[in-house]
Length: 387
Image (cartoon, rainbow, N blue to C red; front, side, top):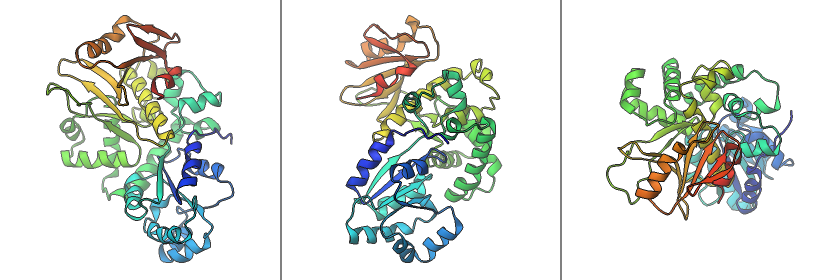
């Protein structure tokens, strides 16, 4: 298997020098275990997916940790969250940095327990599937439509594997394992239908009542299930930017998926050509840019200060990054630049908020400056995101 180096390894090493425990959260198959093993090759490794290990950790946590008193990588730590209280006692006694590296694919079950048991003793990092920057450094970039269709899970770039089969197994594994861990949902088939309905709304305003009606569930159930999908790194809600603005703004969040390959599978795309003419093609490209922004900040050990803006007249900015100077990013799937691409950015900077740094990301190849907006090919997206 060909390992593609992960950018988060820099932050992971830094965190291990500053904290006794570092936790790496992220979706299943995003490469958390491999990252931990490659970064700390001398540490012992234990997976709590293994029934024997889990039983040992659950029934005799002190004995379990004494076995690994020099520290270890503990994989899928959310399977035994009660272990964290005993880790606290151990690290407080030893006062040694970088003792334990925890990984987990469920934010809710692990992060909640971590904040209770290990506050001040743990660094929380998040790892998503491969980023465009990581693929560029590994010289594994492919045409943009191919990347969107394939997605970015490391196994799809290191092994000769059938994409359709990979995501079918992924969805089944996710529903049967992670969903059952978070909440006892009796109708898993209905939950899968809900997941597909969410996929059809990617990049769009989240209408809870419409989603409830289409799935035959209540709005409260929609809210609960959306939280489940967020806590297991399947999708994320992006909220509108509201500071210093009037009441004429849309206040409903949008929803995006953390991986476009999974998204394409949920949309039942069978081949790359299906993507080219798909009615959601523009939203899929926009979702791709969303994931890259999230990955950039996660790889810095931070959460993305990411929003969108839309008023009731229909003017909209796809992404706003709130830093010392507000960044406005518009996304267009077209390969040929059109002056019309800048309509929303021009309106925003003239009538709503100024000064801003403005960028247009498109699938073409030419870098240019138009009306003070930097027009960038998607391969140069990092120039718009980096601080």
